[in-house]
Image (cartoon, rainbow over all chains, first blue to last red; front, side):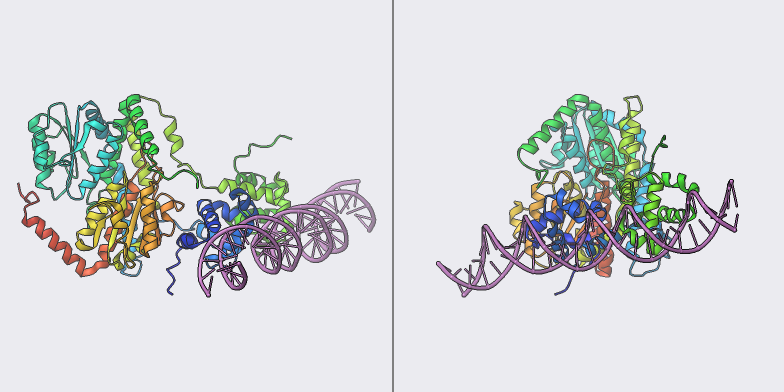
Length: 290
Length: 290
DNA sequence: TCGACCATGAAACATTTGTTGCACGGTTCT
DNA sequence: AGAACCGTGCAACAAATGTTTCATGGTCGA
């Protein structure tokens, strides 16, 4: 049988976990959740805290291919050891096309995106949030990859304003919704180059209807930003790679939701609590402790 | 005698260092320089590596006010313990409701998210991408707010592998798809605390079916990460604010798609070009020049 | 120079560590 | 039903741990 690539002791543990006896699973979960204590404190200590037999730890280690608990702990210790070089060391190396080219691609991408986030205008977001707060109803639009951002925004806003938020085209053709825009409402359009015709149509409809228009885009020159009351810019092309990055757009969306919630005050907080209580009641979530 | 304010064990050590006997100074310097090993390895081990007598460590500990080496090590261990709460939470607390409170909320949030991105393990993503590349079919799962990330991943992967990627539950009840998992396929589950039961069910189904499981989660201890072949971690709670942050998860998803595309080589590139050509032909996009 | 003092290494100590053998209770296969 | 098996807790085991004691060698002051 071919063993899976053993990257870290924790991943080995995780992989083997489901095929283990019940008690060993409990212990394994405990180790995974408290791996720092696992490297520092003694086996008996851990056993006492986990409410398990000390022997279970030795058996767990052997079950996943180590010679004993000491061996497993040594592996965990090494995995946790702080790297002497900075995490950006990969960049220092030449960008040759080697086996690590994928890794450097990713680190570069993440770095670039991290650098792009602070460029976002917090003031613009705060202003836009106030518009959302005042809006009687909120429409959200995003096509293709931006649809995901639109849906997140829709989800988060609906947590505390359920009846007043919806995605354009969610319940029928877009055109039906376009005719429903009214003054006093707000329309959010998310998009970047190349821009879809549909998003531009939504923006124009919002403008004609006298609704407030908030554009989340990669450029002030974006066609759906024309006539917008607020334009929130992010850097879609900032990351190397093949697809434009949505990290910035998502960060804007989240901030927008957070500030709008904050403006909502106690009323919003109550709505959120109600929603959460309902979800908990229907046992959507995994219970806290196993 | 009045004890000096004990901030950290290491600073106590540094302060007392000059007034110590020569041998104890050497040992003390060794401890300060290798404090990680000091917390994990045994006293005798350290003594051997430092070229000193084991007893020197006990004497050092007593010389700076501890009851023994065990006591000192316990203090070092606690000092090194990774904080469960994000380092930014403290800053988020002291905020008063001023005119600029919204702006600072946003900038803090963005900063925190930017800081979290480089923490993502590029190696883990590269490994996971290879699994995706080898998979005959790819299933994607994400509930509640994670659904947006799932859909982005679905969208980007389908750009160059249209027939082999789909979201669990997209075309009917989840249960139908759960029964369709096969060995050689890959299942991606995205989620963070509190974890939904549905996502755990998907993970278990994937495991039972012998499919490769990739978990994108906020903790290695996440229930749907059990048995996963790859776990990609992001920091959901890293940002101050009310909702957990999905920026990290999205960044992972994008990197995953990018590397998988890269692995796809010319075949993937051709599929992507075909897709784009089709979209252009149906005039989805606004034409280049206004 | 002698004696008191301290730093230091080696060895012996009691304790704690990780490990393993064993018995009990439950399940599964014949 | 019987037997073989497996998972589990308990207790005894040898090894390793941190600590202490003791003897040695050096230094400083009287």
